[in-house]
Amino acid sequence: MQRLFGFPERPNLAARYNIAPTTDIAAVRLATEETKEKQHYFPAHWGLIPSWAKSKEFAAKMINARCETVAEKPSYRAAFRSRRCLIPANGFYEWEKLSKGTKQPWLIRVQDMPLFAFAGLWESWKSPDGDIIESCTILTTTASNSISFIHPRMPVILDPSDYDAWLRCEAGAELLTSFDADRMSFYKVSSRFGNVRNDDADLLKPLDPPPTQAQLL
Image (cartoon, rainbow, N blue to C red; front, side, top):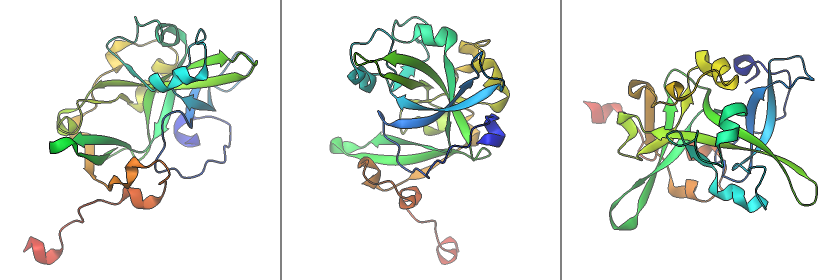
């Protein structure tokens, strides 16, 4: 993460396999005027809390922001203008709706980017008790053709060459597009993912094992 995002911090981050909304996640933003380095790591509450929100519970409704309306919606427009961030990840889950109300989770990754970043926004909120909470949201767009059968939306994945322009708010809607479908890889995973208490490496295992050599003959 340090090599890709260039921050000076050395956070002691545990491996995570099932990160749920409304928990703290890793994020990267531009340095403040008081610091020298260009980009910095910070922990952010996943679920944006606008400065005018009455309570922290507002965050549960704000885990994602649609890129089509982010510049106009009161909850997001100020952050879109001046408080952008990167959300590091090496994959994300989506649920495919099946018949009779059942759902199947899939793990989706980028073939040539073992670590990448979602486009995000951040805010700083002061609680009635005076506590400062920094929060974030992830922008979403229309899903790439290859994964649209799983879910019609997907997080906005930025190309590393666009990180600086995004953080400096020098680029807008032209970056908020579907990721290259040919670069996506995806497979079914266990429904254990649906329980946030499950946070282990077994969640990454394909539900359907690859065919053996005998099956391929």
